[in-house]
Amino acid sequence: MSTAPETTIFATMTALAQETGAINLGQGFPDEDGPPEVVEAAVAALRSGSANQYAPLAGVPALVDAVRDHQRRRYGLEPEDVQVTFGATEALAAAMLGLLRPGDEVVALEPVYDSYAAIATMAGATLRRVALHPPRWRLDADELRAAVGPRTRVLLLNSPHNPTGRVLDRGELEAVAGVCREHDLVAVTDEVYEHLVFDGEHVPLATLDGMAERTLAISSVGKTYSFTGWKVGWCSGPAELVAAVRGAKQFLSFSGGTPLQHAAAAALALGDEVPARLVEQLRARRDRLAAGLHEAGFGVLPCEGTYFLTADAAPLGHDDARELCLRLPREAGVVAIPVAAFVADPAGETRALLRFAFCKREPVLAEAVERLAAWAGR
Ligand code: PMP
Ligand code: GLN
Image (cartoon, rainbow, N blue to C red; front, side):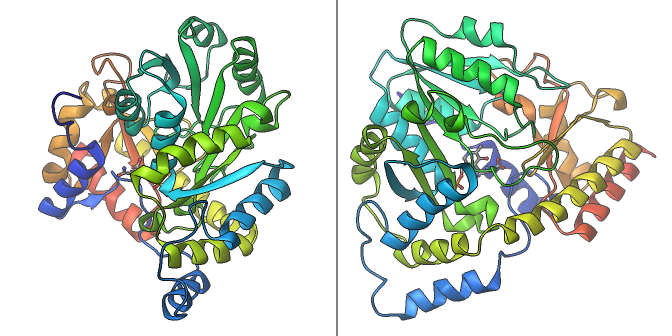
């Protein structure tokens, strides 16, 4: 990149929330900690006298084993190798740097999570976008095929999808898998919301026919266990793909966060109960926010998973969500993120859409919707 990239929309909007004292439904992070026993595992590791130095490059063995075990137990997958990273963010960056060559193309769903275009650029590659169209955010197989060309090397799939809350169904995933097999693409799957599904089911792409051998699966401890600030992530899959990540990652950060890696292993060892409870909680919060936004006069789009709900400000007479999101903190006391921040053409079909995070305590959401209703004059 020849010029410094802009600050991410998330950091910008969180700064605006801090400046104005508005309720922050922008950047996606919970306002409650994850399980106390996981915090205790971190404290114990910090105090153990043997977990405060560099971790092995691949990650601490307990976490590497826990990730393998998770993939096997939940999905029946047997990854050849695992690499621990500083959040999914580093896994994504290292994957692009390790797998792409200058001039290659990478295909991703639009709206596209903000780091994807940046890391494709850092790798000298070009991002090709396949639109999920509002309001249903379904993937059109023909549009997907049209985005793939002779230079495409990687298909970067995010489902459950940020910012739309869409969870791709098996039919859509079969289409993705078909394109990967036909064009001999590597699939990189960003599955950080794998456990946060309220309707339908998360099907990892690697579980589809012929996909385990070409899929690098990425996830992290942040969303599943409500520790977004810990930045412990991982990828797993075929040895060759994991080696490509490791090769890049060793020169990005080498290895560290050792005590938190031990704690992440303890989190994964808690099994499925913790995310299952979180899903129940988040489903109720999604419904609360959806009802409140609807009452305030927004159009509410469907959401099947993640932390996020998208809403349409057009029924309230606002066509430019970017401009609206800059005004809302002061006018309404609420921060949201414009969906247009995730697309190439901000004047297109997402221009009036806002993303609201509902990973907040119920009274916070209640206050936010009350403020929005008052602002909308309802
Ligand atoms: N991918 C998506 C789709 C995300 O929403 C996020 C947000 N945290 C990340 C990756 C980054 O995950 P981490 O915090 O583990 O780096
Ligand atoms: N994933 C979070 C979100 O979408 C933000 C993470 C970040 O700030 N980069 O809101």
